[in-house]
Amino acid sequence: MPFQSSIINHQSSIPCIVLAGGLGTRLRGVINDLPKPMAMINGNPFLHYVFVYLARQKIKKVILSVGYRANVIESYFGDNYLDIEIVYSREDEPLGTGGGIKKAFELVDDFAFVLNGDTFFDVDLNALHKFHLQNVADISLALKPMKSFDRYGTVQLRENRIINFVEKKFLAEGLINGGVYFFGKNIFENIDQEKFSFEKEVLEKLVSQKKLCGKIYNDYFIDIGIPEDYAKAQQQMK
Image 1 (cartoon, rainbow, N blue to C red):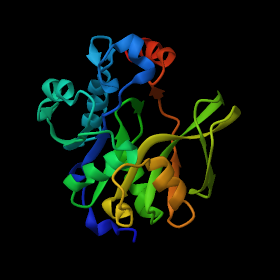
Image 2 (image 1 turned 180 degrees about the vertical axis):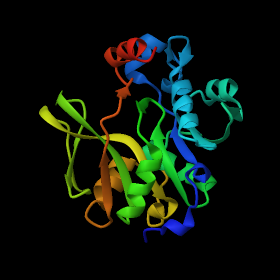
Image 3 (image 1 turned 30 degrees about the horizontal axis):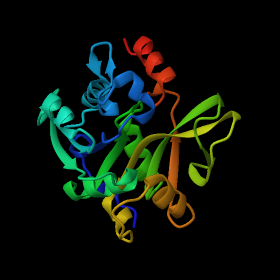
């Protein structure tokens, strides 16, 4: 059941779940055994820039979903960073994106922004929140227009509503899932498993059952998942 605007009075009271449990397998030769969000960008871990962004977005509380070498992240960021309160959702074993988000929502009352700790998408979270309310959506996604790419699956949109998710293939242009979401914990009420993919088991399965909406942003986007883009981030995020 989509929520009504009266439930949330101010964006700053909405927490943000950040997925920071990635192993960084494809970056292993570049970052050694660090968790992927701790890959260094010009003297700071990538996750630092995510926190700078969240502080600018007036987020006051972050739930960090951690797994692989969680101690590295916890010792660096502690329980408060840039005046943002931090609580940790710890995975004893990899739960997948869906399992990680579901577990993190145990520390959330109702609704939250969710984003990846290894991508940076400079979107206006307040605008995404308003978009969610206006469209009476169950899940809202931030979408990024891309050109000449084959690294990402694409999203098909019709009048703000997502109608399909398409597998990775080369496209001259298309919309990709930017990995920034807004939704409530009730999305998981009929999912019993602990380990699962959010993309496969939630987004793709619910696209025909729930109202999934996508807001297009042309803002800066980078995913440091491969060495080429990690190198690009060193130049672009100075």
